[in-house]
Amino acid sequence: MSAEVSSLVNLAGDLAGTYRWTPSSGDSVDPAVADADLAMLRRDGYVILPDLLTADDLIEIREAVVPLLDLHGRNRFEGHTTQRVYSVLNKTRACDRIADHPPGTCVVGSPLLAELPAVHASGHQHSAG
Image (cartoon, rainbow, N blue to C red; front, side):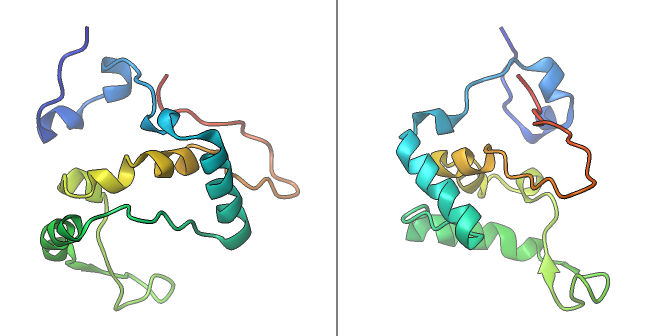
């Protein structure tokens, strides 16, 4: 049995090699819903997940993330005035719901890689399991 991850310190190590694989929360989503979301993403370039966050969730996320908006774009491509947070999931637990929301995990876990001409196929990538 794996040790419990109970603090951010526990997340700094080799989780893929230390902790056993667990099923995705996306497994609980109706495949027809997941297929429709993926089709929307491929067609439109985005997916709308209604009611993903409550008003209280938004307040909590804003309170946690706004203080982290201290870095700006480093060049014209990134946008010199664009504010960004790198590794937000390492810095606050407030955004976990967004990353682990079942419909979202179905879309993120789907193969979206576009193999263009003269690109060698790399196959699907799995971080653990």
